[in-house]
Length: 438
Ligand SMILES: Cc1cc2nc3c(=O)[nH]c(=O)nc-3n(C[C@H](O)[C@H](O)[C@H](O)COP(=O)(O)OP(=O)(O)OC[C@H]3O[C@@H](n4cnc5c(N)ncnc54)[C@H](O)[C@@H]3O)c2cc1C
Image (cartoon, rainbow, N blue to C red; front, side, top):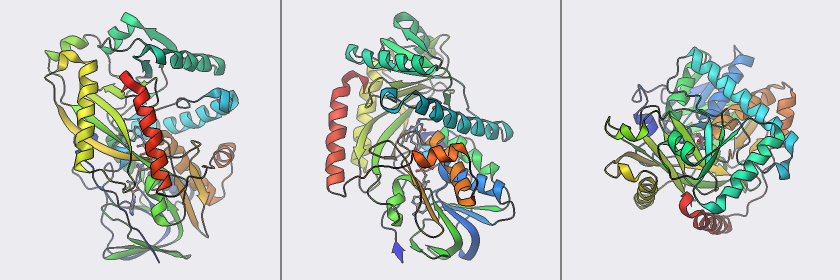
């Protein structure tokens, strides 16, 4: 029997969940007693829910279970920055090639279209087709923007360079010198979206929340052990992202990296003077370690930065406090006219990073399948990985599935302590070179 050692926890106050409608409603039951299913999916984030929804489409009479240690929306899927990125994210097309970028774009837009259809059908709120700015503050990073724009041009992706006063007018801050705007990105409240997706699960799918898997007896059939219950299934799909290694079927592929976010109170009418005619926007940085910032649909400022390798898969009070202090500095630099404004929520979340940016997507035993390592773009990536994992398990073939299989070979990462030392060194180097982009 394989025992799980590390479990997800709630790291801080989860702002998106707190501000989503019906956030206190429990959507699933806790696992109790012995139950049997055809398929069991571990993880009810974007990846696991997408797997279950597609499995149910392919097998309408099969019994399918989805289980999560937390409530839906409390995991990383509900804690992220809420960017549904259509373009290959910060890619260097010189390395991967234009054809790869176009295939990646096709998959990303396939996932966004699928999420959009669920959003429309189930009236999921806070979806905004706002596009995205990739912006630079430091002069030395403007060349990254130029390269990005040149690569978009080469691949034929729509974009616009916005600078100086024009950019300041659109953002409500003159902190950034220049930005590349791409229109196909969507901004969401990720907790509202992932919780809304539960409504897409048909009646042959049972959702279990607050049910950490404590041990697995691999078969087949495979048995998941919970406090006071078991789930037995012929086919087991693991969609636990950074927790994947805990289940013993994937090792030395994913590094768990923590990052943190804060959300202010909504701006008052008086504070909104500074944002006259400014529409809701989202911005990523011209530097890989820079801040992600949003001006949200409900007039709040969202700030995300700080990276940390946390082998325990949980953040301490000190780590959350230190992230809060960095968020404050970053916020005041960008919005000095909002000095009195406070953060209503600050939280942390883990995402799975692989060395070569390829995710794990693999058969890992008789009737056992594993996905993970979405490299910070898992809302869209998890959605298509989950969909094609259901196809893979069911023997449904397609060009998209072939592309996913060919590009899901994460390279080897040394075991701890070397993994932790290497990751911390690299993160420190990145963060110190980001300067005013943080
Ligand atoms: C602050 C932050 C900002 C980010 N911004 C973005 C962004 O803007 N856009 C984007 O695309 N991505 C972003 N990401 C990354 C994104 O959140 C992840 O890539 C995404 O959540 C991956 O989805 P997933 O379903 O694969 O994994 P998760 O969302 O991590 O879901 C895995 C689930 O497995 C469950 N689990 C783990 N262990 C067990 C167990 N023992 N028993 C039962 N259940 C278990 C967990 O509770 C969890 O709910 C960000 C991440 C963070 C932290």
